[in-house]
Image 1 (cartoon, rainbow, N blue to C red):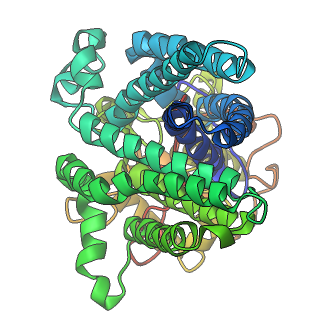
Image 2: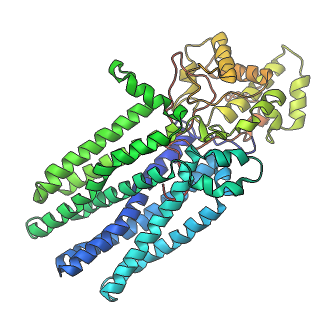
Image 3: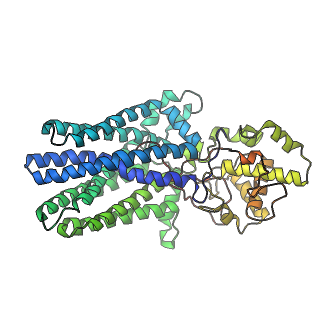
Length: 520
């Protein structure tokens, strides 16, 4: 409750992050893989004295510079803005624990952008050997940037026991290296590097597809086939590193994926299972298109074929990032910070002293007025709804919306007040056999605060009517409910799950692809 909430209507704050992050991942990973593609292709062209290759590569370098330096940088900045609004608590945790790592990443990013510009603008103006060295400098800087960001991203899923022991004590810096080189660091790094290499080939297909097959048939065939080879390492090695990655993911985070796989014959697909299947199907389709068109019939490979392949790569990227984010549920930082910004260490305190009592967005005078208001009066009911909305904003809005994505109104449509109270009680106690435990954080707060949340949810779904003196949102004009309240979180994208009512059958996480600043 240290930060105000950001309520983005209809799609939710998590999907704002997810949409920006998915586009950024597709471009930023190309920025890394393409950094190796260009100098390697240039070296091949120089060795074979192929001026026609050099002309194509010059055009590809221009496309590369504009796409990565403009759109890649813009979406990277967009992620910073989005996560700061959607999950300020989680963003603060990452910044404070990895200040040194962020500084390193920004230095290499500056070198990377500078080298990309120098590489393009000095084409044909400096000695070939020096020009290649600039290209390799760019490639190295881009990959180091990925190396650093990967450590921070994987930390969010598996921070490691050494860091968790000092988390919240002020001595987190003493566990910087164990947190950075966390259990899933290496398999994730290899996976992302393979993705970068394959995306370099896919984006190169876009450029090569524009070569005139009638004027330069041999050139188009050679470049398309050489670019298609860049996908081979991913298809050969990715299953191995993916199995290694899943092996190191905590068992409780694999629950939903395991459930979906084990019951696939009955048609029971969890959201994680669906996204993984999308990744597999789109990747297989890319392989078929590239083999039968780009490799077997390169002269017939058109720009539309390349765009279709790129769209499939976007779908594969989106589904993979969403699955990765959902594996982290119900946490933003595993074992430390819940998806709605509540620290695990604060759970008991909020239950005993009150969730709203620790909110800087609720004045002490308002707290006193709530306690002193006579029972069973319209004023008391209105204040209860105000408190309930504050509870909803702080603990539910991170992953739900009122009317749109994962709508609370839709989820509560068939529930009466007793069912709502039973749901809130179950989410508060969160027994070990609860189907929601795997992806929803516990509901914290006193009994009266939970009752107030129930009052607000009952009003929000349209029954009963709003008490006089409250707004359509359930808050009295000028009250604290019309000011910012507690923190939401990055989802992704996807967004981590909330402590809020869900359908009669166990709901499954379906957040947007949550993201983190910098390269994904």
